[in-house]
Length: 481
Image 1 (cartoon, rainbow, N blue to C red):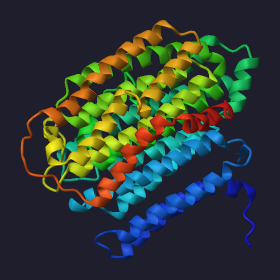
Image 2 (image 1 turned 180 degrees about the horizontal axis):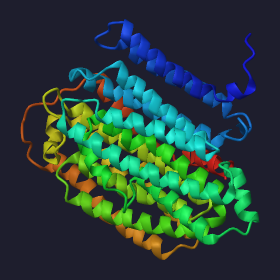
Image 3 (image 1 turned 90 degrees about the vertical axis):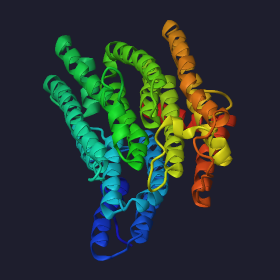
Image 4 (image 1 turned 90 degrees about the horizontal axis):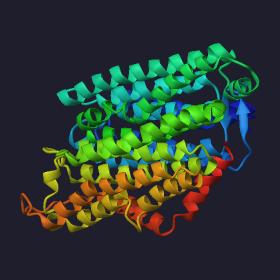
């Protein structure tokens, strides 16, 4: 048996994903497979093997390798497994949709795996340099994925906007990191934390660097007032790309926030706590109000994402382990809800027309009652109505804020959550009570219905029994902070 060096065994999941992405490019070059069955199978196999290895690693103690640059802990295992599962679901939804439009290619799978590699590096980064490398790898792959439909002007425009604003956000984050490096003399997060606690450094320079880091993180999340890219990218990108952007990278953004703010800059909690609070409330306000006015379902879900980011920030804002575990639970639930929402749109779309306008949902219960019911479950969960898991996600975040004695902002957040229910319930009303634009039945494959049934059904099952997932999130938070 080959004796793999210990440090390489710790980063084995990343090695598998990187080799798989490169191997898929070579296979696509030499094997002519119009339906891309081999490449699809290889991609899913790489995700499965990686998930098994990470699941085994999670049973071990925390490992820090490569001179403290890389960390494998419960938080990393939790977020990586969720990223792998979400990526697999995205591939399943995307395959028939991209096949119909002749967009399914080895480049799609390869870029998706490389972006997943960037996500995994960000999640396990214990050094500012590794975190930034992962961020750039993720960002560059997403820019290319958004523009993968070269004949679509909206997709090209969205990719250019994403590139420009993403580069600006990366620059701001890098500048903040350089300020922290300048006053501590290190890129290691543990050393930065101890140096800030022990040294009498200039508070103004530390605050200056902190502001730029928080701004960069807020850009990546799409939080107000740095949300300007979200609606245009969601609308312009092809549906599977929008689905991916709305779900999988959120795990990397959460890891970015926890690693830098909670582990590296914990001593400045009072400063970044106030910034997160302001952005959380503004995101809830702007996201929910702007979503009401939308006529395009993708733009509505984009503003919905902004409002949900506000709730994620609200949990982190409490600055406690309970708040972090609540936000981890929330981002998991949101990813499932987002996958179900965009998955239903993908299933309903055909080769000639995407199911993008809200009016397209009129009378859907008459045209396909099964899909309408599953969309109703998804919308109820996004609205935070019991017994769906969306209710417990919001409740856990608000409970963590109350436990931290943050009362008035919690009351305001509840009001914004009630406002947000309107545009989700409007979709249900349109599907069940409005006259359909066409009486033609919408026929979808059994495989697509089965996947959406599992995806949407999980929102109800987890809502009826949320304790298991909440306990896993709590364990990941408590063992990592």
